[in-house]
Image (cartoon, rainbow, N blue to C red; front, top):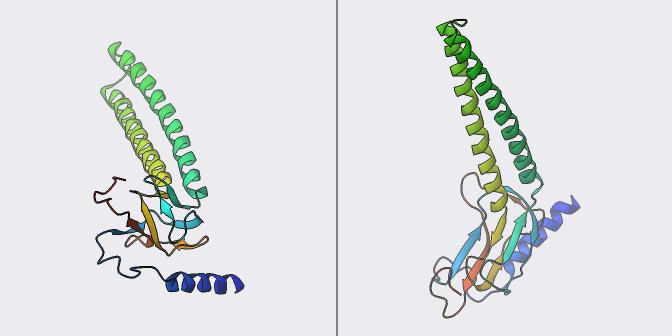
Length: 185
C-alpha cells in the first residue's frame, strides 16, 4: 500500500512540475513525445526535467531481465534446431544412397526429404524468434533521437509500461534552437 501511494505521489508531482510550454507538446513543432516500443517495467530514468541531452544519449531503460532471458532461450532453440537440421540432412543423404542402391522405397525417400524440409523450417523460425528477441532487447532502451532538452518526464522507476495498443508517452524532448532537422544537433 505504501509503495502504491509513493508511485501515485510521484506521478502527480511529475504532472504538476512547471515547464515552459508544458502541455503544449502536440502544438509545438520543436517538441517530440518519446516512448518505448516494447512493454516492461521502467528500471531507470537517466534524465530529469530540463536536462540537456546529446543525440544518442540514453534517457531511460526498462528492466532487461526478461528480454535477456528471451534472447538466451531463442539462442538455445536455434542451436537445437540447427543440430536437428544437420541430422535431417545426414538422414536424407543416407536415404538417397539407399534409394540409389534400390534398398529404400520412394515413400521412405520422400519421408526423409520432408523431414529435412521441416527441420529447415524449424531452424528458420528459431532464427526469426532470435532476431525479434534481440530487437526487443535493444528497444528496451530509449535514446535521444537528437540533441535537445528534456521537457516533462512522465516515467519513474517501477512504472509498468504497456504498449499493446499504443506507445505510452514517457517523456517530452524539446529540440534545441537551431536544431531544425530531426537527428541533427
